[in-house]
Amino acid sequence: MNSLERTKLKKLKTKKFSISSKDIKPELIKEASDLLLNNEVVAFPTETVYGLGAVITSEDALKKIYKAKGRPIDNPLIVHISDYSMLEDIVKEIPEKAKILTNELWPGPLTIILKKKDSISSIVSAGLDTVGVRMPSNTIAHSLIDATDIPIAAPSANISGKPSVTTSNYLVEDLDSKVAGLILSEDSEIGFESTVIDMTVEPPMILRPGFYSKEDIEKVIGAVSLSEGITLNKEPDRPASPGMKYKHYSPNANVILIKSDNEDEFKAKFKSLVNNKNKEYAFIFTTEDLILSDFPNLIIKKLGVSEEDFGHHIFSALRDADKEGAELILVQIPQKIENSLAIMDRLLHASNYTVY
Ligand code: TXA
Ligand code: MG
Image (cartoon, rainbow, N blue to C red):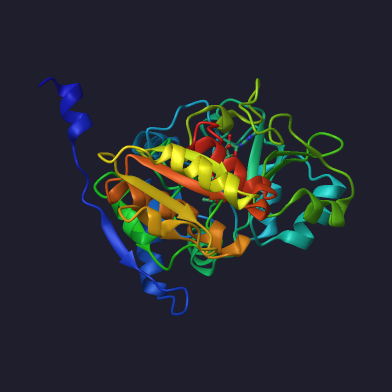
């Protein structure tokens, strides 16, 4: 083994902090924050998905994020802040619409793209002259940034390409022995990522659909546009943002989405797909019970009827199905999920745009 291989295999001793958002222990937050100030990487909960953080002032630390995730270096990181003055330190100017929008929707699942100050490392922006910034509402995330007193760059805390992490068990599975610290907490409240909106163009443009819909945002600042590709049910010719071009949100098993406005049609599609006795199938669906009695060996994941329930559980359901040995995961797409751009975006990526 040469020295390069040895460095690759070197395992870190990962410090785990169990912190409940209902009883935040300041001494544990301080310990995790000290790791960050020591140029180490620490994963922490946010209201959307878990994030993998490093202070934006240490290029050493920022590089560790890319290494731990196996993230392509041309995919920029989102900077997380705990108060508005931090935004002023990061970006060149804050347009009026950005002020109005953040005033209404921060703290929360909204990331704005603005022109970055020259002082912000190009490792954060992956070489772009812009930077994504978000103020999370999760109280542990807030306390951690506050205690560190430096903005924290954090992508989603999953190995690149896999479904995002929304539960502490999958945080350990993906990152144990790869980073210095993990803050283990409750399941992510929302379960999928923030809306990313470019505020450097007029009208502002949504680059990644997320918790806040186009309509939610338009109620606050008037018309915004959707980046080309987001609205389509097929693979876009051009990615909306650097991160959208990579394999994303994908479990090991293949995923197929089945639309189900009409029950008979759905049954026929389902039967034609679940046709090999020797294969392990998983089925992810809402609580409308369908034809399960005909398929006794399915791995079943019921997500609940509402869009909130579906969004909250979808990433962990994909991971659970993998863990239970599924070779093919079928996901029922009822009309109301089809109407959710954010959830459909994740599922289209997970299934590599395979829709029946
Ligand atoms: O909810 C979230 O946003 C989570 C939590 C942890 O905050 N974070 C997250 O980060 O989803 P990540 O790295 O998995 O996704 C960031 C997305 C990528 O698609 C990236 O390309 C885009 O935001 N992005 C970041 N900075 C950008 C920039 N300057 N210009 C265009 N797109 C940018
Ligand atoms: Mg991600």
